Length: 247
Length: 273
Image (tube, rainbow over all chains, first blue to last red; front, side):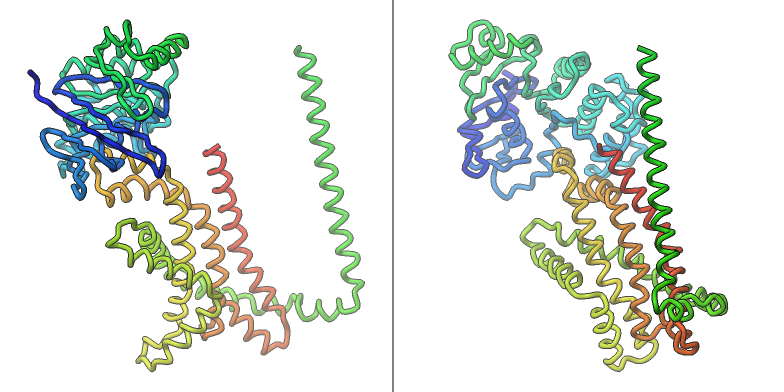
């Protein structure tokens, strides 16, 4: 039985009077990949931002490595260093080269020297096929390359879990594949991952579990085989029908 | 198709030439009217003698230029102070935590007060008020306190410009920094500020032009800079031509600077759209 990495219990979050998460329970074990599906506004992004402590939760608990990271007053910085987050819109720093984007956080946070980090970071760029792009600025890179740099940037902090917030949604269709390849590679290396995604095919192929979110609740959690071929909930059926018809 | 597009290009070229001709003709008409009508006004002879006396202009111009060096000196030593204080005040106003609340209040008061008082009044209050405390030399110098008045006023404006730049950086940039575990200070220093400062260069160029002119206000509390020097000549010669000379000197500096600021703004606009 693999160790439990992350557990959410009864997580609630509202923006003003608008409830976004209505009691989320979720457990993710080490090395697992969990996909979150559901229409926009169902709370997928907010859930990921809450786990990364970018948004404080109103109620419930987030346990990460047996530590309650949702307790009020906890310093979020050391937690975020161990939880990588990749955004839909990349959010690279436009005034820095790809290399500078990646090296900034390890250098500042871990106080490690640039020369010490150099070989590790070069290896990361090589591993994801970007060895020739280290000195390029974000606007000189394609969307797929930018998103891969963003993933490298998060990996350089050596996180124990990676969160991906619709990382292929802003990409041209022909660039999606290269980013999904990166995710497959990470999965094979045993990275614990949570993905909010609309890539049903990818979820079917790679996920251990798929969670269907609706109005801030996980209404169905099952293995991809079950949820995609024989969903229990009417809402899930409708959602899958609409997503699959589009492609 | 080829013939059709040639036809279109010819038409557009004709239109362009026509527009140029009209602009030239109307400008010429205005200039001719000015040259013809202004000398017909009853006071023209007197005005010309007292404002546009070529001899006086030539004889006073060298000393005006020399006095202008003092304007430049005041401008140059005020500039770094304005940049540093402006940045610090902008950062004060950006504080979000409760502990830093007093800093935030201080920033608000600072910008409100020094943008709210006419520059000349700040120059008077500080330039006369502080030396009035009977400080020993050199601490009673109007150069110091006059410059301080300019620094206080302009750093308040610059602070607001920088704050605007900081606010214009999308929140997702801060989120990206934070998600990597960077501290708030590092996120500001390495991610937000470098982008914000670059964005506000054109707006700050305009402040430089304004400051260059406002240095002349110090003439009211003592320093013999360009405006004051022109005033001295005017009194001695009973002629206003030195003022015109002073205006020409200011224009020689401010016009290119303004053009450059406009150029930067236009370029920035192109880059963002």
